[in-house]
Length: 340
Image (cartoon, rainbow, N blue to C red; front, top):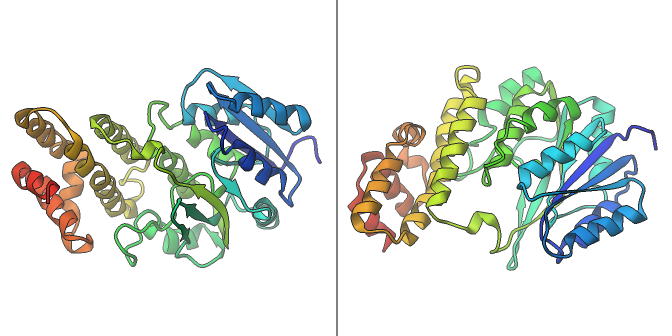
């Protein structure tokens, strides 16, 4: 192995003692050996920190760092600061990877010089596995091909069901040239807990000179009911504000005109994921709840997006009605459909 590894694998760790060894062992089983593994313990209160230390003691290419709890993004940024690889990737500590993942991805990067390499992934729930595959043909895309074939449907792939990503926002099924992800990772606000991947991944995709798409499914994402994405309260709406403001700032439609429609549909999609469960569980008085609903409907990115989307593009009667209610600030009708 060279003194500077080809690949840095960064794993943020927080209270995942049940799954952590599975994750690390899947990385140790890789057919590609020119890598370093950085375990960033984000102030865990269970045995996760001890597990990280044990692996670092056993392998000189595993480096463990402990920090006060600062969140997922903070741990990723800390890991990047300590990393040395020519390329960088991320693994969430309750997920696992195929043994051939980095052999295939690093070989593609080395052989083609691509700024990024993307693979497919599988979402694993207690009930089933969902295979998530890119609609784009495998192979290398240069800048001209990216602008013509990829970017116009990168976030919202309009030929699929609503909502279908052209490229999923996850950082974990992607390999990044160090210089590319370095500047974009640090644009992500530390306070953002939901949707943070898209801020770093999509601007990196837009700035890449070339991208290689693999057809293989190599990453396994564990989805469970305790995930942060399942917590729904009014703080989720504030998270939306941070996310929507940042994504429009980072992916400026004036600089990337083919992104404006996609961002509108993305904002509507994220809002439809959060509005119904938040307002269904909200316990304030009718007047206060209505006031919050009207405030959210009037929030500029939300207002713009809900005015722009075509209702016929949205699947499901409830979603279509929700769009009408948010577009026209019809709280009583919205409340009625929440209960039926």
